[in-house]
Amino acid sequence: MTTHVSATMLTRYASGEDLPSEALWVLEAHLDSCPACREQVGQVTTDPRVTELVQSVRTALEPRLGPGHGRWWGLRHRFRRQMARWAAPAAMPWLLCVLAIPLAAMLLDLNASTDQTPLLLLVAPIVPALGVAASWNRFTDRAHALVSVTAQAGLSLVLRRTLAALIVILPPLTLAGLLVGASPALWLLPGLAMTTAALTLGAVIGVGRATAALVGLWTLAVILPVLAQGSTPVPLEPAAAPFWAAVALVSAAALTRLRDGYQQDPRHF
Image 1 (cartoon, rainbow, N blue to C red):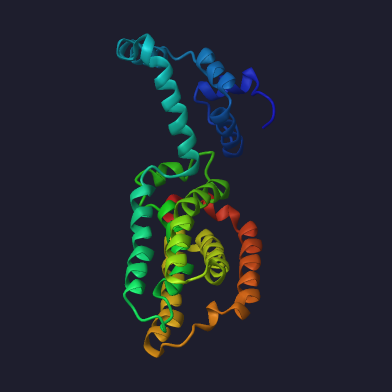
Image 2: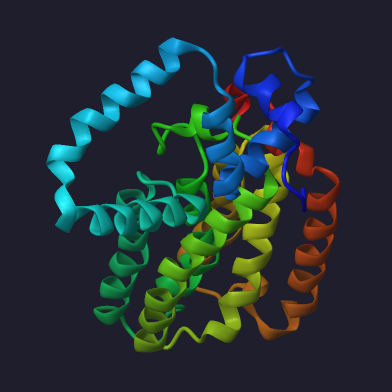
């Protein structure tokens, strides 16, 4: 929505009228980013109970804020509001747990013989997908049921949280890989393909379930055979790069077709 909402529509919304679901989603998405229209909603609200509630909250908060705290409160509120657009409040502890996996692998690699395939190289492709799963599912985010049905929910929010998770995970993962000789050139493209595949399957069965399935498949097909035989994993050889690029492209194309899956009942996830 590029223009302001009409006064008639705002009045119908403020009065609690049962609007069509499509119009309600667009309206609330606009209100989330337009202070002028939000203020207008308050002006057209005629229910005295709402006015009384707002006034009581304002009266209770004003003595606590004072002239020196109002600006700080506003800045903090805006910061938290922007952070909520990019990351779940409960995601950071889970992302730190995810980072513990490559850290443990790095410590094991530093104490292992140099002729073995680094354990970190084997787990690195699935670590970004684990971070994405930690950012978007009902088990790690207590507010997931509420967030997933808001007007701002959907694939765009999932992708923002995915980017936030990758920003936290990729730098330390890259540094750990360099310390043990696991070049990012070997695992970065498979990791991108795994992440995209997790998002695509997540639109159908939920990101958590999709990631668990991919991690289980990777463990059975790559990690366990390499640990048992000590051979170089074929999926992580340079010759496999075109395959992973194709997986990433196909998954991305499928994700655009399945994007509505992220606006379903939150219990689906």
